[in-house]
Amino acid sequence: MPLRLGHRGAPRLARENTLESFRRALEAGLDGFELDVHLTRDGVLVVHHDFTLEGVPLAGLTRRELPAYVPTLEEVLEAFPGAWINVELKSLPPETDGREEALARLLARHSTRRLWVSSFDPLALVRLRRLGVGPLGLLYEREEAEALAPCLGVEWLHPEASLLTEERVRALKGRYRLLAWTVNERPRAQALAAWGVDALVGDFPEALV
Image (cartoon, rainbow, N blue to C red; front, side, top):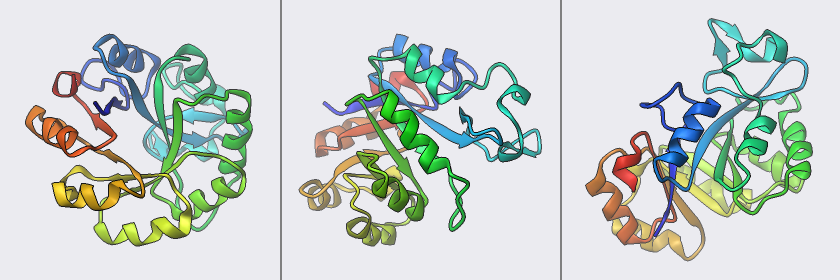
């Protein structure tokens, strides 16, 4: 049975990437959730999908300038200590603002075997690995990105679900754990589970449970 994770919590039941959304995902029977992380101007890791909030870059705002519904990553980890959590670090190559170092420091204070970090940015993954953060996962929506995985030292691959076939899963499973996103139809979830995918991320808990 794969891990079943809510995409930004349970976004059809509550505002995505909020404590309420994560709570609703767990109450619906999911094992945990996926969330998105940015670094604020004052060095706080906060949970939000977009790089901007109402048109203003998150990197230019302080924690106190954000609305109350935007939680910090630390608040999420403290609120849900038993949940499986996939932290997606939002990053744009090649620059860094120290978000990898901030994440490494935070995770050192909240050690758990039920959390792993993923990113679309291969340079962020390189930095995280050098800082001792892991397990790590490479997010991608184009199959050729798989060629980067051996260079990055990741344990997980996170392909967009349509990239996976039974044969592709069989070829990758010996080397990596696999997470498929975004899986919103029960037949597709059942097929991916039967093929041996390790985790499914979806918007609708009822499609995964």
